[in-house]
Image (cartoon, rainbow, N blue to C red; front, side, top):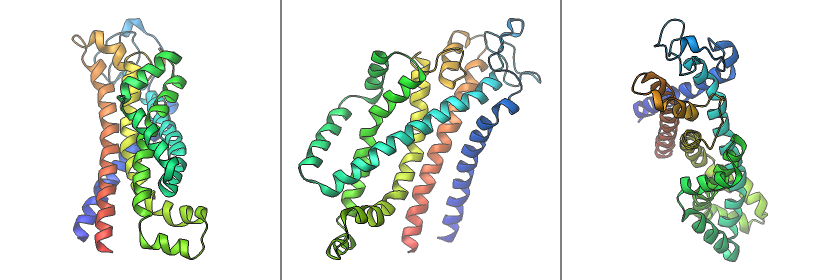
Length: 275
């Protein structure tokens, strides 16, 4: 068991190290990026990877590595904002719905079912299409769509916890509903929410990249991974690295999120069995 915990911890540290390194690159992008991500140099367009341009240049002669590093600020930061806003909305609703139950819970479940009846990407595209393309509108649309998934997941955790004997004991002891939710329910669902959020962060980055690829997210010349793929699609056959490197950045981030989520879940299970 200890060996398994060590293996889980090592994999977890690797995943968190990758994510931490990516965010550090984004934080210090102006000092780390070798070139200005917006600087156009037509004389150097579609250059292959070299010492001057480690990842090559795009169709306008812009440094791909510099644009990927600066793109972290758009893709990763937007994903964190979306996840934070989603949890800020979902946790209070799920706590009240799963704890109080009754007619309000029934109405909330009907609303959630209606929202989830439409595929996420279709509903997101429809909202962005109505509001107009742009980063702010994209963030709003993704939050509007993703809150239902979060509420359903967190509500199921709350319902399960509220059936435990110690919750009934807390009620019999005269604790207020607020105290029970904050002291007894919320701490018990914190780790599952963290695991869910780590996995969801990768999905959000994929959504951001997909919408930007369709021209509904960040607009040119803003460096963003999905928008970079959209700009590069016409040049893939003659300069495949123009699409490969932004695609690898997305794969690396999403894989790290999935690794962290998976190992956190295994760690929680292993610790639970130890206890």
